[in-house]
Length: 206
Image (cartoon, rainbow, N blue to C red):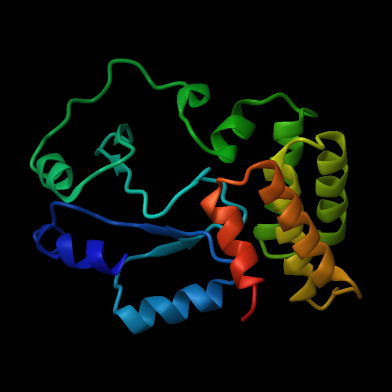
């Protein structure tokens, strides 16, 4: 982020570009500390469950003034071209089901009771507001992980939920080890996933 912060400064100050960062850290306070240290002055959203479906960092997505994704893997040069371009509004709305990747768009397009919708509802209960119905949501994620034993993301998200409970007033003995176990399971199922591996390396400390 610091490199892109410097490279986009002129465009942002000229009002030609707005930037929002998304971090997949376990703890928002650690992300905030880093942003202050680096002097980042754009909004940063916290995505501990990786709803954006990010596999590597840094990923830069360009979205035009109509909400249309124009690039998923941008470069500094393509950002400059994007900022200098005025896009026409689409003739027809883009269906939510066609917006990829990410858990959230898939869940919004899924039927009630489907694994995607149940996952979204459980994560929403954990995040908005934080821990509003944490135990019920955690059990729902556990049921989903058990029903999808080959789904790396389901195992990994359950690990995140256990780590979040450890940081809450509802913490239970063994939550930390459960988080590590599910993170390791997720990484074993998908060894090339950078975000999964990074979380294990950090072990989610404050």
